[in-house]
Length: 141
Image (tube, rainbow, N blue to C red; front, side, top):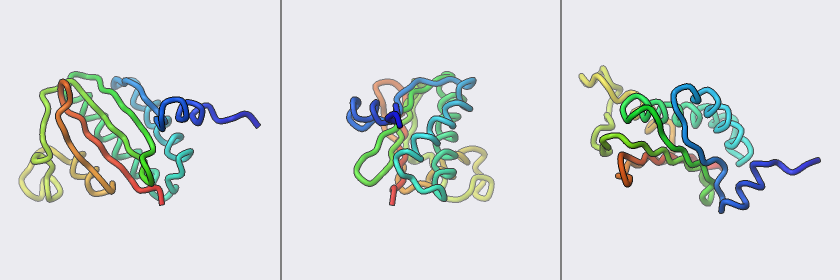
């Protein structure tokens, strides 16, 4: 049986499973690629859907609020599957992540960030060279 091409890429790239830019039209393919890589990395099926949903929410935010494009890096870090999504928008901080479901607390936005924080094991927002970098992660075991 031939070796999995993602494995060769991961070995050459120091643990990177996926590294690509994306636009709105590429979101469906991006979701498939993230799911495939998550399965290969060993993320349990029960959590894989939540991970793909969280990645999709953050990628969609990059497209909608930060110029229509973004970059995604998916890698295995220790016992976690980590995804970093960067954009070239105005940037933001973790302070904008609602504590309650948006709508219940009067907020009109932030549902994707709230949901991502709810379903992942780790969520962080930092400043990129330009824009924001959102890092989300789930434990593999």
